[in-house]
Image 1: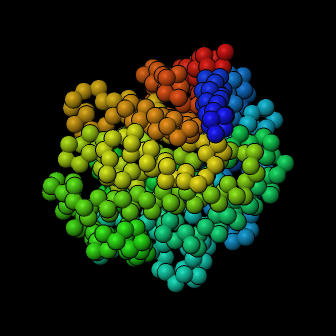
Image 2: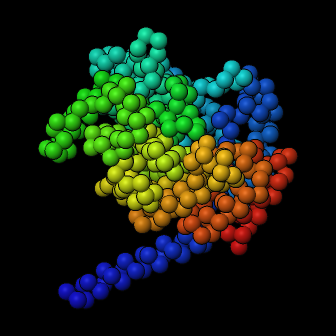
Length: 462
């Protein structure tokens, strides 16, 4: 028994040292491709000069030591009609990236991209999916979307079109799986050139609710808005309360107006009904993330890593009235712990439960953000992104989960502090690499950011 115990202890120590060495010596530095190359010049059409510019950017990236390029593979763009897949654009862009000796990082983007009218390119959720699920389930289309706590003039919740509500996953999941299978089959010859395959789990490709996406009154830097006021969400709550624990049998679903009053009073921070409401809201989202990852892991070849992303909701963390409320309405954590490391460790554990952690890459945004410069700025947002990025690093490290960083705002790449912050996180925060939003922000005439990114790559690869 002693020898067996020592053997496994030695193996565990070896793996820990191996992972540490990998973290030190194998950093990856990537860039995001444009949402579509037609954005470069005339946004109404796709032109050869768009592709020529993209090729030049790829060449610059290769010369500065960039490893790979991530590309949104838009579900609504590829499968505009049910079971009819058009991969033409992705055949071309993958070939361009591969021909420059760069790795490809496809993002299976099940979320919507619906920009302002300045662009002719958009990729909403496929129209047919709403009708299909409505017919299969008998559930009204508005119920298949996330329903906000904010009500319109008719007393109906505002809805988000950015992602199918995960409470409708019984009908949506087979479609996600089918798309994933078709992607893997079509790009079988490209599999050796994929650095990883990233999975969109919610709005903007992130595992979250659309709590600050402006279809309602939720926006930065306010608390955000709950998105669970559909009948299918309410039914899920009651099922959860019955199966989770007998002591919750008497819990009631908190109606939107009651929820607003509870938060505004400021005296209900430890109310058991509110705590458990947030617990269900968080658990439900995390289970969705886990189920999506499980689906992808079963379809995608085992030698390819699967990536997922959480957003850096860095505001309202220090809110004296209700700490971390923006992260709660976003669904990232539950309300039982206000400690960032503990809260995110618990959330990541739930997502990863029973999954092969060695195949999963975790991406986290806002790594370039800095804390407010003044007390006045701080009081507007109660924001502490610098603390948050290290909390996530510690949470990931405690689970032996590889964490990668991403900037959340390309405008910040113009400033020294952003590069200092990102360098420090890679050096001291156990981040395995950085993805820059976007390729055009570190190439061409963006000389400052190009110089900084090149210097970062050189520092960690030499």
